[in-house]
Image (cartoon, rainbow, N blue to C red):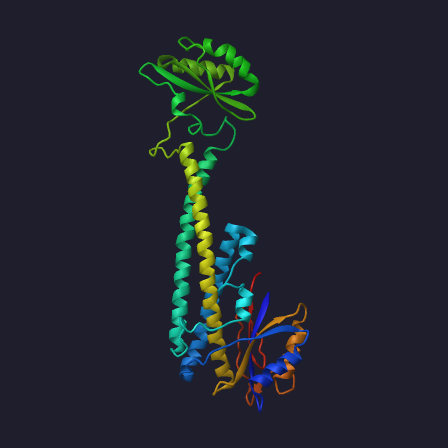
Length: 373
């Protein structure tokens, strides 16, 4: 949703009230308007304002990116419903802009403008740094889970069997061992009738079903260690696949089923935590962004209209497909009635880029921001 933040000049006998009434009259059926309250900030010197104008444009773009990252993070983690529930001081982002009130407790209006901008920049920079760390931490543990899932995926013919076998299903002594064999579902009867005779020293009736899927079954069989190689050879001849088993341990990087389940819970917990933090960080960053916009509008208004400050700031939400007519109405109302760009004796005065990269010039200060629903 595009929002136009405009600073309208007060010319002649036109005061704030008259400017607001004129705005309302000229934009009927073209936009929904709200006053944008900017406190009496410290002006400083002209050189300071000129330098600050450039810094504000860069800082605005930086904060815009951070706000977008946070919104996207919430969307990725919680989906459209979570993104639609984002709030700034208890209201939606668009409502926060249209009802904006300067936070004097956090941003004291009498402080030098440069200091205010530095406070905002440092705050949002810390949010961005924390976001990088938290996302990296979440992606790392999610990557570990994905690796474990890959080992546990696929058919029994190819997947890792280490997490399927339980300790009580293993016989392992000085002379005896347990072999694990993957058998096709259609070959199970053949397996049951032949495994005891595949080689000497296979323990009778020792075959147990460990796991199965749509195509294969994993079975175990107990035999003497000294005939294991002969047993493997006989299995290959019959089309049975003997699989190697290694007990899960931290040494080989394998995880037990219980460890994988705990990892799933950890991932879900971190996901919930990151989503909640992102919502809180979004609120902080967005609020800081709108305060920066207010400072930028104040600075550009002073540079455009001079001192003392004489302007009416407003937020306009254009009605769909009304933008050209709305611009024409504003130009007509706030350019001396001539409907053309504001010029001085030497030509067009300055270029005032909008917050979203606008490069058009108007006879009033105008910024555009887009707030996603």
